[in-house]
Length: 306
Length: 316
Image (cartoon, rainbow over all chains, first blue to last red; front, side, top):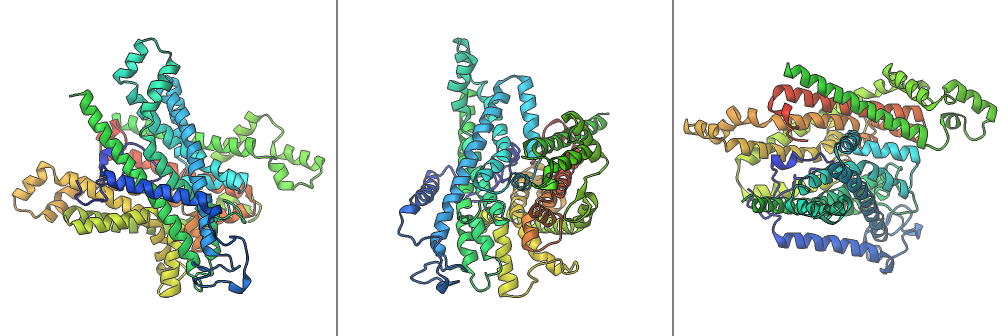
């Protein structure tokens, strides 16, 4: 395997498992390296805390217009410059991080909740439930993610709440599939058989024994879904189908930059870099968690089949 | 005839998925949207009489299953209705815009294949830590960078700053106009192709027949070209074919940024004009292309590599 501290390497047996919009195992490397995971987690926490604290920071008003300083280059008063209407770019980019993270986390939470219900039903509910749930998931998966989200937004109209729904609407099947596979393997484990033999109800066995042990692989996929959701929100907002002004969004900021980036490249660079780095963090966390899970399941298999 | 059976079962599966999709769209459009099609067409000022007449003409007063049946019947006959904004048959409007989308998707696929497979081969032969680190960092960035930011960045650098490539438009099918949009579309997927090529080749290069070939005096690269490549590139070919489906279906934002006269951009304008039949028609056509291409890949791959029939696709 790769010898660098972090490298792109794939393992075809791994990438076989589930189709997801993002390459699950594309970024691989020595992610069992604890320090690396801790650093990633710390960076993600920092970003989230920063987004939470934005209203408390001594920033300029993100909607205050200063037409005397329209398209001003970065300076000591406006660290990252201003846009056409003289909005402070630093303030706007920080406020927009709240939208992106909110969409990423809420849409993913919705998708995970749905995915756990459907996937749990499929994995633990008998053959008919399994077939129905999984064929439905297949149909949803056959929609291209972005196109599906665009169609939903076009029908229900733009706005933050509909962005949550559109992304969750096409995000849950991935989670459902992963969770089902995980449930199927966990329910074969001796401790589940033991609980059943002790006379626990199916409900209790599922909630107390299967669910907590089957949820592990979801960490990696949820993180990738957060990345996909943040990208999708920015894309939808970029084409005017996502959150609406005066709410701040990196997608909206990028849309505003169109036609002006020749005079004011910072309008393009600032939101774009913020967006790319945020997505990158969640992709790396997803890859890192996926790798750790793969290692954990390999070693646990060894324990059960010595 | 196991091949025929396999073919038929996959074909039936494809039809089932298409039917399910069409049904989801029907449910979404006809049951969840506030106000029915007549209301949308006539606007809020319509008289109740006019609404009732139009509802009758459109068959909206019939039972739901009759409406569903008619909807399917029209789809089977490629009757997607008439666009309000273009005043044209939806199916023929889409056919008009499809060539530009196919042209762009084809170019993006070429870029993915050439750079992805090429770089993957280099990475599987060279064992340089520096090269791997470089590849990993640039790959992670290309995966994370959203396609629309990359598109704007390319426009800024190559068209606006350097002025070496046209900024947007089809330019009368000029290949120079194709470079920026196709690169933006291809970038992230090229990373995945690289990774799969490299992994697949490395696995293949570790097999005994390669050792035998090396023992006969072939260099590593000769062994790769003559023996390993043809065995290792199956999953890559599948991945590329699957990607063609999503390229045809998912290029809307890129087409908008580059003013590319394709189906994606047309759909965008249809959405802005609230041209419901055109939006639904375009989504149906794009999703159908996506599903059919994926199913064909499945079928083709199953016939090419009989091991796949039993199990699932190698990559997906």
